[in-house]
Amino acid sequence: MSVLTKEEVAGWIRNLIPYLEKPMMLAPEGLFNEDELIVAAGKITRYGDNLTPSYNFTVLEQTENLKALVELYKVVQ
Image (cartoon, rainbow, N blue to C red):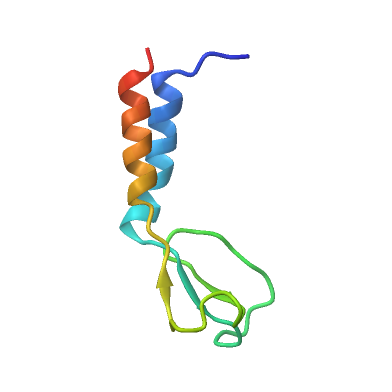
């Protein structure tokens, strides 16, 4: 098993920042005419009626993930 480094955790934090600046959103299925799912910062992704039918758009927040990564960064040697 390899040892986790601060550089690895810092890389994860850097990768997460675009999703904090432009979070992904979920949109009702059928709203867009796309055949494939692309996961990217700022991307609006469709979902079926069975997931969250009471919302039109749902923002996928990453704040808690960032907090967890910062805490991990603090304890890694």
